[in-house]
Image 1 (cartoon, rainbow, N blue to C red):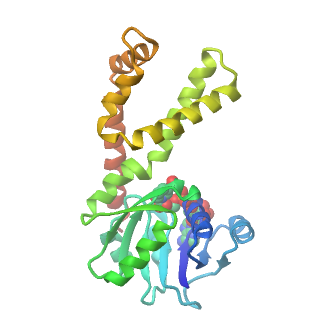
Image 2 (cartoon, helix red, strand yellow):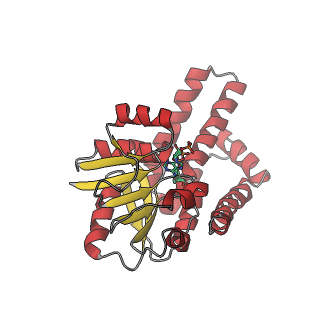
Image 3 (tube, rainbow, N blue to C red):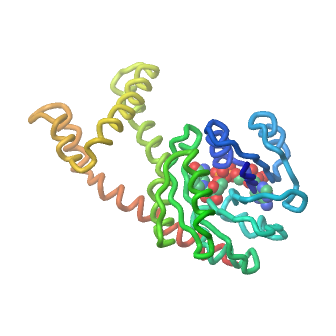
Length: 265
Ligand SMILES: NC(=O)c1ccc[n+]([C@@H]2O[C@H](COP(=O)([O-])OP(=O)(O)OC[C@H]3O[C@@H](n4cnc5c(N)ncnc54)[C@H](OP(=O)(O)O)[C@@H]3O)[C@@H](O)[C@H]2O)c1
């Protein structure tokens, strides 16, 4: 059974552990967490083994799942002892991890997302050259159990995907929240607004999945000339919503690059 140790067990590690627990594959999961209150909660709810460090147990995989600002501290005195170290920290490059782990090289970067809770994460993966093909398969299967994987051979694409799929669930929640607020402002009761918005997003995702090459056509199919949808889309275009999205994604990507610079030392 593959042994995985999470260093830091906040939102993302908990989402991953829930996804791993629900998968057919079985894993032995250890957690190193410094927040005492959280330790008790996750031990009870996620049935993991809480440990203080890597000194007294053998682990195949270490998943660094602390905030980017805490990576340096978490790497200090981490006795990795031949395990593969996977970082999911936004922005932190393998060059930076290597430095904090005193030149250690069995490293992988993965950008999952919060949909791991539902086994629906989309994970982008970049392997350091030293990771052998057998280990790549094991890592692929771990992340497959919380969603789907895309392997990149350019590390920069992890930062680019961070700005899309890593942060993306929050963009979608933000849009949903905006639509729910708008729905209540034109008079719909809150509970009805929530259901209408949720089902519209879920249904539109299912429809779009089969037609991703022709989203224009899908928009056209809903928008009859002089109709309600056209009135709404016109309002998006007048305010140049696409440019606002461009800028938001660019800001997230640039921030990922900045985070690496800020955490090199
Ligand atoms: N959340 C997401 O949707 C998402 C998506 C993709 C990637 N990520 C990445 O995943 C990482 C974790 O994000 P998160 O949202 O899960 O953060 P989080 O909720 O703050 O969880 C991090 C946990 O690690 C603990 N911690 C800090 N330093 C530690 C140390 N040295 N040893 C052990 N535990 C330590 C923190 O305790 P304290 O709170 O007491 O400091 C906290 O409980 C980040 O690097 C983020 O970029 C997150």
